Picture 1 (cartoon, rainbow, N blue to C red):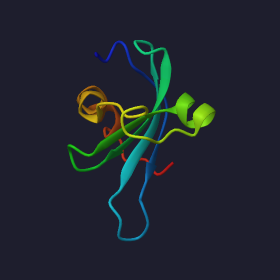
Picture 2: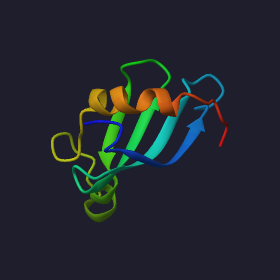
Picture 3: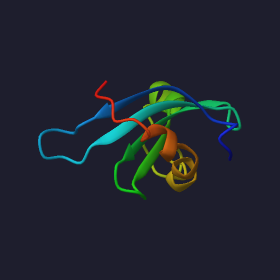
Picture 4: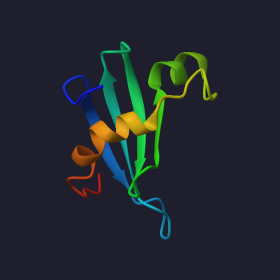
Length: 89
């Protein structure tokens, strides 16, 4: 997985309430898997969740194993770009 393969389609910053840990949420085109991923990345490194958006919509699938992706791999490619700005979209 490389930066060239993934395209951030949209991203937003969430402050996660008054005392919560802020996070970024992004829709990422993943052509290697022919899918759009929902990426949720917290400010602290090593805290990234990735789900297939299509599986969420079509199958309402949130299960580990069938709709879980290696957050560490997506984080390695996307962290710098997602956290380069601290917008409040």
